[in-house]
Length: 288
Ligand SMILES: Nc1nc2c(ncn2[C@@H]2O[C@H](COP(=O)(O)OP(=O)(O)OP(=O)(O)O)[C@@H](O)[C@H]2O)c(=O)[nH]1
Ligand SMILES: [Mg+2]
Ligand SMILES: [Zn+2]
Image: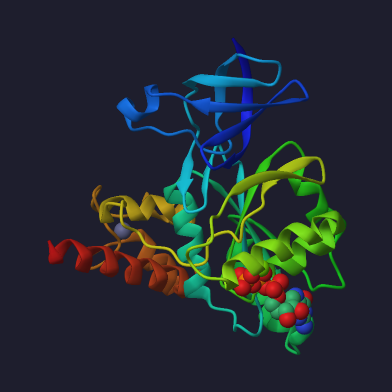
């Protein structure tokens, strides 16, 4: 038995890389019974049958997993948001951030198209909100700074962000060799929903990135509303001051989080985003 990582899934085959060798493997009946199917990013134990073929015997415990795109063991998600076209939105950014937190994936914020913005103050304002909690980078297609290139080393990354924010452009600037791949994917998407999609981990600046369009829309279908507050790590600094231990930071009196907003120690936009998502989850519950 060998151990390796699935780097590509296509038509029932899982391509596993183990010590620099790529094996074409299948997952036999085992997974049909357990209903757990292998994902790109999984660490697996597999049996070699012919020289470069084999079958997967075991999926090792996952650190995390996404279903759209289907990737496991993600180290970070690059949440891309443009300043203009489409317009920057605190709310949308917070949704992506909370989603990453809910899936135990470290978010990195990448703000694109800064060249389209005249107002430098706006960038500073955004930086002030997120800098204390997350790694945040500002780019435009002509200025990719060196520290952004450094974030990929030894990590598995996934992209997220609305359509048109510049994800493909960013990747192509960072890794010009990727150009073909990203173009192929855009074309596949344009052809419609029936195109077979595959996910592949490709090399990027010393690490791996899931070569997919990433995710652009998100739903909080699995998250309990009482756990949403844990997806806003900046609230933690202030929630010790809440009078009630179970404070949801909504209508409760003597709430440390709401007090922090009132004092200007916490951005009101963060709390507003929290309330909106909380409401959304509550409305969803009410329907059942
Ligand atoms: N001015 C400016 N335009 C940019 C920048 N980055 C990307 N664009 C343009 O924005 C448009 C969308 O960029 P894409 O890279 O295709 O966006 P995407 O996020 O991959 O979009 P989807 O594949 O639809 O999800 C293209 O016309 C790019 O040329 C930038 O930094 N500045
Ligand atoms: Mg794209
Ligand atoms: Zn509170």
